[in-house]
Image (cartoon, rainbow, N blue to C red; front, side, top):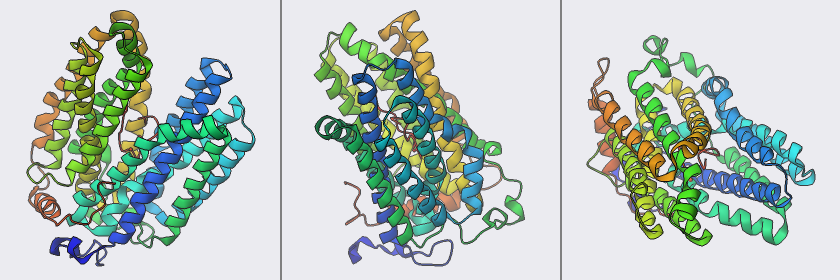
Length: 448
């Protein structure tokens, strides 16, 4: 990295009294991009395998549940472990175990093994995602969290952007097994990268008790701001996930679109994801809380527009708006958790975010089926778009109100210093589905 990319603010010491480690941040971003690309490419290939071999739809549903359930069920355990144990050892151990599991799935490809091994691989992701989310602050310090989160999230979403096409190409040209081998290679890259990273999520073991007496009774779900953000995000992501059920019926049946047009519309949302994530690092006027609220509204408006369009092509700008909101939300959620949650509890905060990012899509798929049967596509879009916008309005006072226990002055100063950095040379140009990441780490990322 060039010296020009290091503005004075970016040279501020981290919480551990060390200079920011930007090279490690870029390595972490590459690890996340590879992990997302490998996971979603493999998921795409496995879905095509199950469909092509005429296995019952129940296997596809079971695979989706297996990819999401561990992030929800294991959240209390994975968050606590992230805060208490050596984060590098966890990342290396999890990634190496995932290499083995992917190779076993490639060698033993049948629907029952796919479901079981998907659950085990996803359990590993439940351990690694809280660490991926919290490491940027440890690497570069609180003053640089916004820029670091933008770099990390943009890289992850770039991996999401190319993954479905890559998975389909590998499965179609070389077979499903090679898509799984590719996923194993990405996990091996994550393991090697974790070995090269010297930064730990916390300075030492027992970090949960290192925050001082003032943080001894802290709980993510008792924190008014964090609780509000997580619950509101769950509602909005559920609405967007319902769109995943409605979209194909709106495009193919109501609007008379082709399969190719349906694919183009989905790509517009994915492009918006990357644009929204990149924009966060360059927005110097709005706080992260305000940006999250605006992102909720963007996604709600996109869903509302779908209720009134008369042409397939009009969905492309609507989905671009929704994707921009999705990317802005996902990145700013990382910023908020890194800035607002006490250092010793960041692992648990990101585990809670991962639980929301996996539970909301499962809820959305279930509700979407009932809503589609009861009201049809366009009326359903009117309902979910209105709900998303109302959710933003309801939580706005709580999200923008100053905390009674701590003023936001220091956090606003840190946010402003981070945004005022010289971004030249920063590789931000470079995403579960919400079920997969959404995820993961989620980053809460939902594609139509």
